[in-house]
Every structure is written in structure tokens, then in C-alpha cells.
Length: 108
Length: 280
Image 1: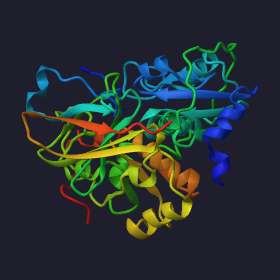
Image 2: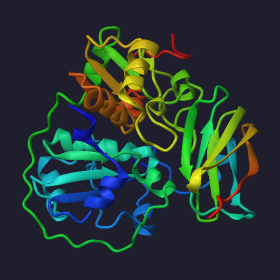
Image 3: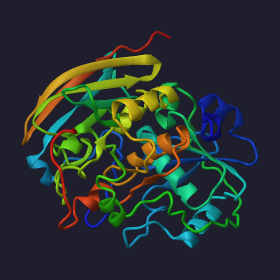
């Protein structure tokens, strides 16, 4: 990204972790639908007050990654058919918080 | 101006995506999204490669915009329907950009790519072939675009709307949380700016909230003085293009500008005032 204007947009699954990421408070994980990685869906990060902070389309393996700050956060998942799920996590600087969010695939 | 002048829904797009005179354009930052699948007949515009000058931090000039639209096969009288990922942030940015260069007939697909995907509507990988055109653009309409000196002069004078998340506004984060937080600029916000996160204007599926809710949000809850001119900003100007769209196109506010320099410029300026902490 050197010298290039980096946008606010989120690539599927989130931005890759690099050698410079050691001071970040990372929240990452996988979304599963009935036990298998969810291929289509969105992971949204909400702050302690329930406000939107960021959103990424799920990566091909159902993955997502956020660079947060120390504190409590909620990951909310949206998927086709009105499927939703939420998990609350705590992030720390220099630490990667990993979670799995399960959604139930809609019937039909 | 009514909603139907500036927005279409997914059903409308499905019914009209093959119409002559209608051009669907997907605008993404992550261009792999288009490659994986896009709405049938949609062409692609890359937010960075196609719309930004490759050397200076600025837009492609009028001639560059003419070349881009000509190459995409877009004519001056075509109805352009923009949509994209990230809750239409970059599509709204492109909408504002099309208006800046004087394209009259442009609309957003409400909910963008996300709503389309959550509805499980069809995406294709075929890239449409469109014959080259001779597009003619206008000079940039600077009534829609704010620059840094104007923003500094607007402190305490005009409505300044910071549309970033509360954590970016307060200085806790320097960028949306899907991005690494190590950034060159200082944290915080422009003094006297009101924090109305762009997300408050949208439903979870990316569609815009009803006009009455939007008016209540900005006028009653945030305390914007609608009799004053307004400048919206975020980090790089695309989320604030989303809010510019709400204020100028949906709510019909007369003098609303988008400050595309936004926090990556303001937070790097030497000597300007910065406020930290939550809004007042």
C-alpha cells in the first residue's frame, strides 16, 4: 500500500495480516452454516453501544477479519434467507481473538 | 426530487437490465468482487484505478472522465445505474462523481450488491461488450465538492457532518475496523462537527431508510441546522458521498458538499485544530 491511497472498502474476508500487524487488536473467524463454511454473507463489527464499525463480505472459506481496539465488540453475521447470528468478543492489542459464528441455513 | 428520480430497486433492475439506454455499472474497491460475479450486463469501474489520478491525489480530469466513460460504452443520454459492495459506499461516491462531471441521468440501486446477494439474485461472470462512445463531460461542479481551506473556514459556521463510526470520530480508531489501524494522520475530528455515522442512514441490508426517518436523524437527533450549508466528510470521501446522497439527493438539501480530502487530509494538516472524544 506504500504511497497509494488506501480505501475504506473491505475485500472479501478482510485485509491480510502482515508483519506490521503485531500491534493490532485483531478479531477474526469463520462463519459456518450447518457446520460447513458459509460462502455468501456479511460479517459486521459493532462497538459496545451497538454502533456499526465495519463490515466485510465473507471470504471464500467463510472467513472474516477486523482490526479493532482493546475492548468489547459484537460480530453480527447476515446471510441469504434472513439468516443472522451474533457473538460478543473481547479484543486486546497484540492479540488475535478467534471465533466461529454458526448460522442455520434457511429451510428450502 | 423524489426517491424514484435517484434510486431504483432490485426488481426494477431485473426488469430493465437489458434495455437499450440503460447501463449498469458496478463500482467496487475490491475488484475481485466483479470478477467472481456481477449483475448481468454490468460493466465495471474501479474506484481507485479508474477515478483517481495515478500520480497526484486528485480525480481524473474532465478529459480522463470522458475517456473512461467512452471506453465503457456510456453515452451522455444513457441512464446509468450504479451499484457496488460496502453498502454502496463506492457506488455513492461514483454517483457524486458522475454528478460532479455533469451526467444528468444517474441512479443508485438501493441496497447495492449486498441486498442483491442477500436476496440470492443472479450474478454472472460474462463481461458485456459495449461499443465505444464519444462521451462529453462538463467542467467539475465545485458546488458539490469541498476543499480543505473551505472546510477549515467552515468550523463553527456551517454544518460539518463527520459520518465515520463513533470510534473513529472520538479518536479511538483511525480507520474502519477491517483495516489496519497504523495510519499517518492524527486521530480525532474537526471541531464543531456532528457525528452522524453513515450507517444510521441505512438498514442492515444496505437500503436507505425512509425519508421521514432520515430527516429526523439529521435534524432532530443530530441537530443539523438545515438553514445552513453543509459539508460532509469521512476518511477518504466515499462514506461521506453516501451521506451527501442522503442529504442532497433524498432530502433535497440545497447546499451540501462532500469533502473528499476527508480525514486522511485533514488529520495530516499542520496547525489545524482537532477535537478528541465523543460528540457534544
